[in-house]
Image (cartoon, rainbow, N blue to C red; front, side, top):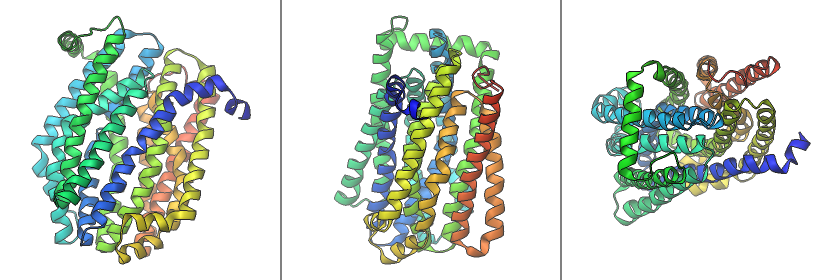
Length: 459
Protein backbone atom coordinates (compact mmCIF):
# COMPACT_ATOMS: atom_id res chain seq x y z
CA UNK A 1 0.00 0.00 0.00
CA UNK A 2 2.84 2.39 0.81
CA UNK A 3 4.37 1.80 -2.61
CA UNK A 4 1.07 2.73 -4.21
CA UNK A 5 0.84 5.90 -2.14
CA UNK A 6 4.37 6.88 -3.20
CA UNK A 7 3.80 6.05 -6.87
CA UNK A 8 4.02 9.56 -8.33
CA UNK A 9 2.75 8.78 -11.89
CA UNK A 10 -0.28 6.92 -10.50
CA UNK A 11 -0.94 9.63 -7.92
CA UNK A 12 -0.91 12.18 -10.74
CA UNK A 13 -3.45 10.21 -12.81
CA UNK A 14 -5.78 9.75 -9.86
CA UNK A 15 -5.36 13.32 -8.61
CA UNK A 16 -6.12 14.73 -12.07
CA UNK A 17 -9.68 13.45 -11.72
CA UNK A 18 -10.21 12.97 -7.98
CA UNK A 19 -8.90 16.32 -6.73
CA UNK A 20 -11.01 18.54 -9.01
CA UNK A 21 -14.10 16.46 -8.27
CA UNK A 22 -13.56 16.44 -4.49
CA UNK A 23 -13.04 20.20 -4.45
CA UNK A 24 -15.94 20.97 -6.78
CA UNK A 25 -18.25 18.48 -5.05
CA UNK A 26 -17.67 20.29 -1.77
CA UNK A 27 -19.38 23.30 -3.33
CA UNK A 28 -22.62 21.27 -3.52
CA UNK A 29 -23.02 20.65 0.24
CA UNK A 30 -21.67 24.16 0.80
CA UNK A 31 -24.76 25.33 -1.05
CA UNK A 32 -26.95 23.12 1.15
CA UNK A 33 -25.21 24.52 4.22
CA UNK A 34 -25.94 28.06 3.02
CA UNK A 35 -29.60 27.11 2.38
CA UNK A 36 -29.77 25.64 5.89
CA UNK A 37 -28.05 28.63 7.44
CA UNK A 38 -30.24 31.17 5.63
CA UNK A 39 -33.48 29.39 6.51
CA UNK A 40 -32.19 28.53 9.99
CA UNK A 41 -31.79 32.21 10.82
CA UNK A 42 -35.32 33.13 9.79
CA UNK A 43 -37.91 33.83 12.47
CA UNK A 44 -39.46 30.35 12.78
CA UNK A 45 -38.26 26.73 12.68
CA UNK A 46 -40.89 25.86 10.09
CA UNK A 47 -38.91 27.70 7.39
CA UNK A 48 -35.93 25.42 7.99
CA UNK A 49 -38.19 22.38 8.21
CA UNK A 50 -39.99 23.37 5.02
CA UNK A 51 -36.74 23.72 3.08
CA UNK A 52 -35.59 20.37 4.50
CA UNK A 53 -38.75 18.53 3.40
CA UNK A 54 -39.09 20.29 0.05
CA UNK A 55 -35.46 19.76 -0.87
CA UNK A 56 -35.71 16.12 0.26
CA UNK A 57 -38.47 15.53 -2.28
CA UNK A 58 -36.56 17.34 -5.04
CA UNK A 59 -33.42 15.41 -4.12
CA UNK A 60 -35.38 12.17 -4.30
CA UNK A 61 -36.53 12.92 -7.84
CA UNK A 62 -33.20 14.22 -9.14
CA UNK A 63 -31.10 11.55 -7.41
CA UNK A 64 -33.40 8.85 -8.74
CA UNK A 65 -32.44 10.14 -12.17
CA UNK A 66 -28.76 10.28 -11.26
CA UNK A 67 -28.31 7.21 -13.43
CA UNK A 68 -28.07 9.70 -16.30
CA UNK A 69 -24.65 10.79 -15.09
CA UNK A 70 -23.52 7.43 -13.75
CA UNK A 71 -24.34 5.32 -16.80
CA UNK A 72 -22.98 8.01 -19.12
CA UNK A 73 -19.69 8.05 -17.20
CA UNK A 74 -19.27 4.28 -17.11
CA UNK A 75 -20.19 3.62 -20.74
CA UNK A 76 -18.24 6.60 -22.08
CA UNK A 77 -15.17 5.66 -20.03
CA UNK A 78 -15.19 2.14 -21.43
CA UNK A 79 -15.58 3.49 -24.97
CA UNK A 80 -12.75 5.93 -24.27
CA UNK A 81 -10.50 3.14 -22.97
CA UNK A 82 -11.25 1.13 -26.10
CA UNK A 83 -10.58 4.22 -28.29
CA UNK A 84 -14.14 3.99 -29.64
CA UNK A 85 -14.92 7.57 -30.69
CA UNK A 86 -18.27 6.74 -32.28
CA UNK A 87 -19.34 4.95 -29.11
CA UNK A 88 -18.59 8.05 -27.03
CA UNK A 89 -20.73 10.28 -29.24
CA UNK A 90 -23.55 7.72 -29.38
CA UNK A 91 -23.62 7.51 -25.59
CA UNK A 92 -23.86 11.31 -25.38
CA UNK A 93 -26.70 11.58 -27.88
CA UNK A 94 -28.76 8.78 -26.35
CA UNK A 95 -28.34 10.09 -22.81
CA UNK A 96 -29.28 13.66 -23.78
CA UNK A 97 -32.47 12.43 -25.41
CA UNK A 98 -33.42 10.40 -22.33
CA UNK A 99 -32.67 13.38 -20.06
CA UNK A 100 -34.96 15.73 -21.98
CA UNK A 101 -37.80 13.21 -22.11
CA UNK A 102 -37.57 12.59 -18.36
CA UNK A 103 -37.48 16.33 -17.61
CA UNK A 104 -40.69 16.84 -19.59
CA UNK A 105 -42.30 13.98 -17.68
CA UNK A 106 -41.39 15.54 -14.32
CA UNK A 107 -42.87 18.89 -15.28
CA UNK A 108 -46.12 17.28 -16.45
CA UNK A 109 -46.47 15.19 -13.28
CA UNK A 110 -45.42 17.81 -10.72
CA UNK A 111 -48.89 18.32 -9.19
CA UNK A 112 -49.72 14.62 -8.52
CA UNK A 113 -46.16 14.09 -7.25
CA UNK A 114 -46.54 16.83 -4.62
CA UNK A 115 -49.99 15.60 -3.58
CA UNK A 116 -48.73 12.05 -3.18
CA UNK A 117 -45.55 12.98 -1.32
CA UNK A 118 -47.10 15.34 1.22
CA UNK A 119 -50.02 13.02 1.89
CA UNK A 120 -47.49 10.94 3.88
CA UNK A 121 -46.13 13.88 5.86
CA UNK A 122 -46.88 14.20 9.59
CA UNK A 123 -45.22 17.62 9.77
CA UNK A 124 -47.08 20.72 10.88
CA UNK A 125 -49.23 22.68 8.43
CA UNK A 126 -46.65 25.48 8.35
CA UNK A 127 -43.79 23.10 7.43
CA UNK A 128 -45.87 21.38 4.73
CA UNK A 129 -46.89 24.71 3.21
CA UNK A 130 -43.29 25.96 2.96
CA UNK A 131 -42.14 22.58 1.57
CA UNK A 132 -44.82 22.69 -1.13
CA UNK A 133 -43.86 26.25 -2.06
CA UNK A 134 -40.21 25.24 -2.41
CA UNK A 135 -41.06 22.22 -4.58
CA UNK A 136 -43.38 23.99 -7.03
CA UNK A 137 -40.64 26.52 -7.85
CA UNK A 138 -37.62 24.21 -7.76
CA UNK A 139 -39.10 21.58 -10.12
CA UNK A 140 -38.71 23.98 -13.06
CA UNK A 141 -34.98 23.43 -13.01
CA UNK A 142 -35.49 19.80 -14.11
CA UNK A 143 -34.45 20.23 -17.79
CA UNK A 144 -31.23 22.02 -16.86
CA UNK A 145 -30.41 19.67 -13.99
CA UNK A 146 -30.84 16.47 -15.99
CA UNK A 147 -28.94 17.70 -19.06
CA UNK A 148 -26.15 18.89 -16.77
CA UNK A 149 -25.92 15.38 -15.30
CA UNK A 150 -25.37 13.93 -18.78
CA UNK A 151 -22.76 16.53 -19.71
CA UNK A 152 -20.79 16.01 -16.50
CA UNK A 153 -20.95 12.24 -16.92
CA UNK A 154 -19.68 12.46 -20.49
CA UNK A 155 -16.80 14.75 -19.56
CA UNK A 156 -15.79 12.44 -16.70
CA UNK A 157 -15.97 9.38 -18.93
CA UNK A 158 -13.46 11.06 -21.24
CA UNK A 159 -11.13 11.60 -18.25
CA UNK A 160 -11.85 15.34 -18.12
CA UNK A 161 -12.62 16.46 -14.55
CA UNK A 162 -11.92 20.14 -15.14
CA UNK A 163 -15.14 20.81 -17.04
CA UNK A 164 -17.46 19.18 -14.47
CA UNK A 165 -15.54 21.04 -11.77
CA UNK A 166 -16.17 24.35 -13.53
CA UNK A 167 -19.86 23.53 -13.97
CA UNK A 168 -20.37 22.58 -10.34
CA UNK A 169 -18.43 25.46 -8.83
CA UNK A 170 -19.95 28.16 -11.03
CA UNK A 171 -23.48 26.79 -10.59
CA UNK A 172 -23.22 26.61 -6.82
CA UNK A 173 -21.46 29.94 -6.39
CA UNK A 174 -24.18 31.56 -8.47
CA UNK A 175 -26.77 29.77 -6.34
CA UNK A 176 -25.22 31.02 -3.09
CA UNK A 177 -25.05 34.60 -4.36
CA UNK A 178 -28.67 34.52 -5.51
CA UNK A 179 -29.67 32.90 -2.19
CA UNK A 180 -28.30 35.85 -0.26
CA UNK A 181 -29.80 38.41 -2.65
CA UNK A 182 -33.28 36.88 -2.80
CA UNK A 183 -33.62 35.96 0.90
CA UNK A 184 -31.61 38.55 2.79
CA UNK A 185 -31.97 41.32 0.22
CA UNK A 186 -35.48 40.89 -1.18
CA UNK A 187 -37.01 39.00 1.76
CA UNK A 188 -38.44 36.22 -0.40
CA UNK A 189 -37.74 33.57 2.28
CA UNK A 190 -38.28 29.97 1.08
CA UNK A 191 -39.40 31.07 -2.40
CA UNK A 192 -36.13 32.95 -2.79
CA UNK A 193 -34.08 29.85 -1.90
CA UNK A 194 -35.91 27.80 -4.53
CA UNK A 195 -35.74 30.50 -7.24
CA UNK A 196 -31.99 30.90 -6.69
CA UNK A 197 -31.47 27.19 -7.38
CA UNK A 198 -33.53 27.30 -10.58
CA UNK A 199 -31.65 30.24 -12.08
CA UNK A 200 -28.29 28.81 -11.05
CA UNK A 201 -29.03 25.46 -12.74
CA UNK A 202 -29.78 27.18 -16.05
CA UNK A 203 -26.61 29.21 -15.66
CA UNK A 204 -24.72 25.93 -15.29
CA UNK A 205 -26.43 24.60 -18.41
CA UNK A 206 -25.19 27.55 -20.46
CA UNK A 207 -21.66 26.92 -19.24
CA UNK A 208 -21.97 23.19 -19.91
CA UNK A 209 -23.13 23.79 -23.48
CA UNK A 210 -20.16 26.05 -24.13
CA UNK A 211 -17.74 23.49 -22.66
CA UNK A 212 -19.30 20.72 -24.76
CA UNK A 213 -18.71 22.68 -27.96
CA UNK A 214 -15.17 23.40 -26.83
CA UNK A 215 -14.55 19.73 -26.06
CA UNK A 216 -15.88 18.57 -29.41
CA UNK A 217 -13.93 21.21 -31.32
CA UNK A 218 -10.69 19.95 -29.74
CA UNK A 219 -11.24 16.43 -31.09
CA UNK A 220 -10.88 16.25 -34.86
CA UNK A 221 -13.49 13.50 -35.51
CA UNK A 222 -16.17 15.66 -33.91
CA UNK A 223 -18.04 18.59 -35.51
CA UNK A 224 -17.04 22.00 -34.19
CA UNK A 225 -20.06 24.19 -34.93
CA UNK A 226 -23.38 24.22 -33.08
CA UNK A 227 -25.32 23.38 -36.24
CA UNK A 228 -23.02 20.49 -37.14
CA UNK A 229 -23.18 19.23 -33.55
CA UNK A 230 -26.99 19.21 -33.52
CA UNK A 231 -27.14 17.43 -36.89
CA UNK A 232 -24.64 14.79 -35.82
CA UNK A 233 -26.36 14.13 -32.49
CA UNK A 234 -29.78 13.79 -34.18
CA UNK A 235 -28.41 11.37 -36.75
CA UNK A 236 -26.57 9.34 -34.12
CA UNK A 237 -29.63 9.19 -31.91
CA UNK A 238 -31.95 8.25 -34.77
CA UNK A 239 -29.74 5.46 -36.01
CA UNK A 240 -29.51 3.90 -32.57
CA UNK A 241 -33.19 4.26 -31.80
CA UNK A 242 -33.90 2.19 -34.91
CA UNK A 243 -31.45 -0.43 -33.63
CA UNK A 244 -33.16 -1.17 -30.31
CA UNK A 245 -30.52 -3.70 -29.38
CA UNK A 246 -27.99 -0.90 -29.24
CA UNK A 247 -29.96 0.67 -26.41
CA UNK A 248 -30.44 -2.47 -24.34
CA UNK A 249 -27.21 -2.03 -22.39
CA UNK A 250 -27.97 1.61 -21.60
CA UNK A 251 -31.55 0.86 -20.51
CA UNK A 252 -30.55 -2.14 -18.39
CA UNK A 253 -27.82 -0.17 -16.63
CA UNK A 254 -30.13 2.81 -16.11
CA UNK A 255 -32.85 0.54 -14.70
CA UNK A 256 -30.57 -1.03 -12.10
CA UNK A 257 -29.00 2.26 -11.04
CA UNK A 258 -32.49 3.80 -10.84
CA UNK A 259 -33.62 1.06 -8.44
CA UNK A 260 -30.43 1.49 -6.43
CA UNK A 261 -31.02 5.25 -6.21
CA UNK A 262 -34.68 4.70 -5.29
CA UNK A 263 -33.64 2.65 -2.26
CA UNK A 264 -31.01 5.20 -1.24
CA UNK A 265 -33.25 8.23 -1.48
CA UNK A 266 -36.15 6.42 0.16
CA UNK A 267 -34.01 6.09 3.27
CA UNK A 268 -33.28 9.80 3.45
CA UNK A 269 -36.85 10.82 2.68
CA UNK A 270 -38.06 8.44 5.40
CA UNK A 271 -35.64 10.06 7.85
CA UNK A 272 -36.92 13.52 6.92
CA UNK A 273 -40.60 12.62 7.21
CA UNK A 274 -40.26 10.40 10.29
CA UNK A 275 -38.18 13.09 11.98
CA UNK A 276 -41.00 15.53 11.26
CA UNK A 277 -43.33 13.31 13.28
CA UNK A 278 -41.07 13.89 16.31
CA UNK A 279 -41.60 17.67 16.13
CA UNK A 280 -40.46 20.76 14.24
CA UNK A 281 -37.27 21.13 16.29
CA UNK A 282 -36.27 17.51 15.66
CA UNK A 283 -36.79 17.68 11.89
CA UNK A 284 -34.81 20.94 11.86
CA UNK A 285 -31.99 19.36 13.88
CA UNK A 286 -31.90 16.37 11.54
CA UNK A 287 -31.67 18.77 8.59
CA UNK A 288 -28.61 20.37 10.18
CA UNK A 289 -26.89 17.03 10.82
CA UNK A 290 -27.81 15.63 7.41
CA UNK A 291 -26.05 18.68 5.96
CA UNK A 292 -22.91 17.39 7.71
CA UNK A 293 -23.41 13.94 6.19
CA UNK A 294 -24.01 15.54 2.81
CA UNK A 295 -20.62 17.21 3.12
CA UNK A 296 -19.05 13.78 3.66
CA UNK A 297 -20.97 12.16 0.82
CA UNK A 298 -20.08 14.77 -1.76
CA UNK A 299 -16.40 14.72 -0.81
CA UNK A 300 -16.41 10.92 -1.04
CA UNK A 301 -18.32 11.09 -4.30
CA UNK A 302 -15.36 13.01 -5.70
CA UNK A 303 -13.27 9.88 -5.14
CA UNK A 304 -16.12 7.75 -6.49
CA UNK A 305 -16.21 9.82 -9.69
CA UNK A 306 -12.50 9.17 -10.12
CA UNK A 307 -13.14 5.46 -9.60
CA UNK A 308 -15.93 5.48 -12.21
CA UNK A 309 -13.75 7.16 -14.80
CA UNK A 310 -10.48 5.31 -14.17
CA UNK A 311 -12.04 1.87 -13.59
CA UNK A 312 -14.15 2.26 -16.74
CA UNK A 313 -11.09 3.24 -18.77
CA UNK A 314 -9.02 0.34 -17.38
CA UNK A 315 -11.79 -2.16 -18.16
CA UNK A 316 -12.24 -0.75 -21.66
CA UNK A 317 -8.50 -1.11 -22.23
CA UNK A 318 -8.44 -4.55 -20.49
CA UNK A 319 -5.63 -3.34 -18.21
CA UNK A 320 -5.81 -5.34 -14.95
CA UNK A 321 -2.56 -3.91 -13.59
CA UNK A 322 -3.79 -0.32 -13.86
CA UNK A 323 -7.12 -1.36 -12.40
CA UNK A 324 -5.58 -2.93 -9.30
CA UNK A 325 -3.24 -0.03 -8.61
CA UNK A 326 -6.03 2.50 -9.04
CA UNK A 327 -8.30 0.65 -6.61
CA UNK A 328 -5.56 0.42 -3.99
CA UNK A 329 -4.63 4.09 -4.12
CA UNK A 330 -8.24 5.31 -4.07
CA UNK A 331 -8.95 3.07 -1.05
CA UNK A 332 -6.12 4.75 0.87
CA UNK A 333 -7.48 8.21 0.08
CA UNK A 334 -10.97 7.08 1.03
CA UNK A 335 -9.86 6.08 4.54
CA UNK A 336 -7.81 9.26 5.04
CA UNK A 337 -10.68 11.51 4.00
CA UNK A 338 -13.21 9.71 6.22
CA UNK A 339 -10.87 9.96 9.22
CA UNK A 340 -10.53 13.71 8.66
CA UNK A 341 -14.30 14.19 8.68
CA UNK A 342 -14.86 12.05 11.79
CA UNK A 343 -12.14 13.88 13.67
CA UNK A 344 -13.43 17.27 12.57
CA UNK A 345 -16.98 16.53 13.70
CA UNK A 346 -15.70 15.17 17.00
CA UNK A 347 -13.67 18.29 17.75
CA UNK A 348 -15.79 21.05 16.25
CA UNK A 349 -19.27 19.59 15.75
CA UNK A 350 -21.08 21.85 18.24
CA UNK A 351 -19.47 24.91 16.67
CA UNK A 352 -20.62 23.82 13.21
CA UNK A 353 -24.18 23.41 14.49
CA UNK A 354 -24.22 26.94 15.92
CA UNK A 355 -23.07 28.30 12.56
CA UNK A 356 -26.05 26.73 10.80
CA UNK A 357 -28.82 27.71 13.20
CA UNK A 358 -29.27 30.33 15.89
CA UNK A 359 -32.36 28.63 17.36
CA UNK A 360 -31.42 27.31 20.85
CA UNK A 361 -33.98 24.47 20.79
CA UNK A 362 -32.65 23.20 17.45
CA UNK A 363 -29.05 23.46 18.69
CA UNK A 364 -29.91 21.37 21.75
CA UNK A 365 -31.63 18.72 19.64
CA UNK A 366 -28.71 18.50 17.21
CA UNK A 367 -26.23 18.07 20.06
CA UNK A 368 -28.10 14.95 21.23
CA UNK A 369 -27.38 13.13 17.96
CA UNK A 370 -23.96 14.52 17.07
CA UNK A 371 -22.21 11.29 18.09
CA UNK A 372 -23.76 9.49 15.12
CA UNK A 373 -22.08 11.99 12.79
CA UNK A 374 -18.66 11.09 14.23
CA UNK A 375 -19.25 7.41 13.45
CA UNK A 376 -20.96 7.64 10.05
CA UNK A 377 -18.05 8.83 7.85
CA UNK A 378 -16.00 5.74 8.76
CA UNK A 379 -18.93 3.42 8.04
CA UNK A 380 -20.10 5.10 4.84
CA UNK A 381 -16.86 5.94 3.04
CA UNK A 382 -16.42 2.46 1.57
CA UNK A 383 -19.96 2.45 0.18
CA UNK A 384 -19.34 5.67 -1.76
CA UNK A 385 -15.98 4.45 -3.06
CA UNK A 386 -17.24 1.01 -4.11
CA UNK A 387 -20.28 2.54 -5.79
CA UNK A 388 -17.82 4.30 -8.10
CA UNK A 389 -15.94 1.06 -8.78
CA UNK A 390 -19.02 -0.86 -9.89
CA UNK A 391 -20.45 2.07 -11.87
CA UNK A 392 -17.17 2.20 -13.80
CA UNK A 393 -17.51 -1.54 -14.34
CA UNK A 394 -21.15 -0.94 -15.45
CA UNK A 395 -22.31 -3.61 -13.01
CA UNK A 396 -25.69 -2.14 -12.17
CA UNK A 397 -27.11 -5.38 -10.78
CA UNK A 398 -24.39 -5.52 -8.16
CA UNK A 399 -25.23 -2.01 -6.98
CA UNK A 400 -28.95 -2.75 -7.01
CA UNK A 401 -28.67 -5.97 -5.01
CA UNK A 402 -26.34 -4.41 -2.44
CA UNK A 403 -28.81 -1.58 -1.90
CA UNK A 404 -31.71 -4.01 -1.47
CA UNK A 405 -29.78 -5.77 1.31
CA UNK A 406 -28.92 -2.48 3.01
CA UNK A 407 -32.52 -1.24 2.78
CA UNK A 408 -33.79 -4.40 4.51
CA UNK A 409 -31.21 -3.84 7.23
CA UNK A 410 -32.33 -0.23 7.66
CA UNK A 411 -35.99 -1.21 7.97
CA UNK A 412 -35.26 -4.04 10.38
CA UNK A 413 -33.04 -1.91 12.60
CA UNK A 414 -35.58 0.92 12.82
CA UNK A 415 -38.40 -1.51 13.57
CA UNK A 416 -36.47 -3.13 16.42
CA UNK A 417 -35.26 0.17 17.90
CA UNK A 418 -38.23 2.45 17.15
CA UNK A 419 -38.78 3.10 20.86
CA UNK A 420 -35.53 5.12 20.69
CA UNK A 421 -37.39 7.51 18.37
CA UNK A 422 -34.89 9.80 16.60
CA UNK A 423 -31.89 7.80 17.82
CA UNK A 424 -33.46 4.81 16.04
CA UNK A 425 -33.32 6.72 12.75
CA UNK A 426 -29.62 7.42 13.13
CA UNK A 427 -28.84 3.87 14.26
CA UNK A 428 -30.72 2.47 11.26
CA UNK A 429 -28.83 4.82 8.92
CA UNK A 430 -25.52 3.58 10.36
CA UNK A 431 -26.53 -0.05 9.76
CA UNK A 432 -27.63 0.87 6.24
CA UNK A 433 -24.22 2.36 5.38
CA UNK A 434 -22.35 -0.54 6.97
CA UNK A 435 -24.29 -3.15 5.01
CA UNK A 436 -23.69 -1.29 1.75
CA UNK A 437 -19.96 -1.24 2.43
CA UNK A 438 -19.71 -4.90 3.45
CA UNK A 439 -21.82 -6.31 0.63
CA UNK A 440 -19.97 -4.41 -2.11
CA UNK A 441 -16.57 -5.25 -0.60
CA UNK A 442 -17.41 -8.96 -0.61
CA UNK A 443 -18.42 -8.84 -4.29
CA UNK A 444 -15.24 -6.95 -5.22
CA UNK A 445 -13.09 -9.44 -3.31
CA UNK A 446 -14.79 -12.38 -5.04
CA UNK A 447 -14.47 -10.90 -8.51
CA UNK A 448 -10.85 -9.93 -7.96
CA UNK A 449 -9.96 -13.43 -6.76
CA UNK A 450 -11.56 -14.94 -9.87
CA UNK A 451 -10.21 -12.23 -12.22
CA UNK A 452 -13.67 -11.27 -13.50
CA UNK A 453 -13.84 -7.56 -12.66
CA UNK A 454 -11.54 -6.41 -15.47
CA UNK A 455 -12.93 -8.81 -18.04
CA UNK A 456 -16.65 -8.23 -17.44
CA UNK A 457 -17.71 -4.81 -18.64
CA UNK A 458 -21.35 -5.27 -17.77
CA UNK A 459 -23.47 -7.78 -15.88
